[in-house]
Image (cartoon, rainbow, N blue to C red; front, side):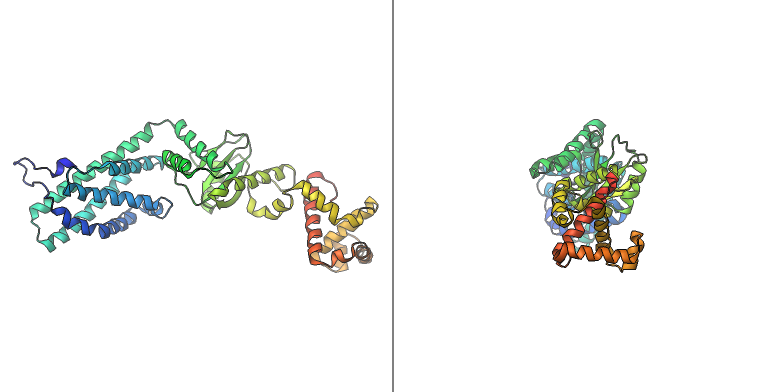
Length: 404
């Protein structure tokens, strides 16, 4: 940029921008930045999404830095452009990681220049600036934009020159760090996010995939973090599981079974994948019906009731102690009748239809249960504990094929 504001050859009809011009431009910067933002996001909706995302503020700072640097160079040709240069290269790297060409970014740069030139014309009328000065401004501005594009292209080509394996390795390391299950240094995650050109989201959704896992990467979204080589393959989706994300997964994992974890704050990512893996275990044991793509959201009660098998055994021993001394056959009948009553609070006729017995048999069993359990069926807390245990045992019996 320095060469743009040095005295030009006498044959050049335009001439340099006077340093005093910076004082005219600087007050215009805040509103000009907003105007450029509106125009660019209207012309390029993908940038509107980025500005609303977790990196939105950093992008705004980069735009401000680029415009302020132009004014600084007019005021002082020897001003450092290190921050601007780094930001432009970052923009280029991000475009490469997002899978776009440089065309979109170049278009945004040039649109911003046209908006700035339009503003300069208005300001020129107020200050009665000469047409020659405005032409010099336009010449300098578009030459400056060429520099921004060149710097961004450096970052873009830097990423393209890296091997796909290196990029994947960075993202796997980032995924492992997020799933470490303990607070990781913010600087470590930030550094990896920067290297991988990946925006750290506030929420994530983890997917547990059944091995051996195959992913059609051409159909997968580019912002996924993936590790299919692990003994328990998994991937991370930034943000919630939308209909579009689910459709993408169905196409990207056409022949692979997977479980969708809950959407959680990024710091709890390890919990989301733990629940998803537990769902796959319950599918294997027959507790949950198999399907290509299973949502944890649909099985929360099952996950909760079967979260600690050893504790369930202890609870069952305590809550069903009253029938422990009864013969196995009679105990099973009474427990099943109790479960149906707790589930339905139905009449003897309704329960008899479910149990395939005469209503009078139901009444007899209920009198026996009232005698055996006593206040345990009256107290709300005790009754809830008994119902939870019976539901859990019923679920677990699906995996063993035995009575609860």
